[in-house]
Length: 106
Image 1 (tube, rainbow, N blue to C red):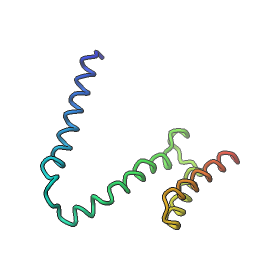
Image 2 (cartoon, rainbow, N blue to C red):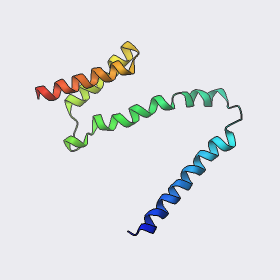
Image 3 (tube, rainbow, N blue to C red):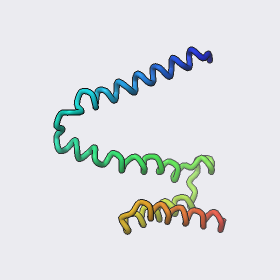
């Protein structure tokens, strides 16, 4: 692959990113949105973290894509503690602690 080809891909991706953001922010940014759209946008950030973490728990690359019971239990503990305590930080700490304990014991 040549350098100009790679820079072309980067330029096209940058243009695509700009256009998708401009469509939302540039054209709709200062107009009032319906309540149902605002409600869905409010939960977008909350949905990103589980979307990133769930594949790593269910099909971790470290085990070749096979489910690992230690990771699944740690993820369930993190979810349970976060829901019970209402704190994402406490949930992450509980899950990480349980995962570390599981790695030490196995």
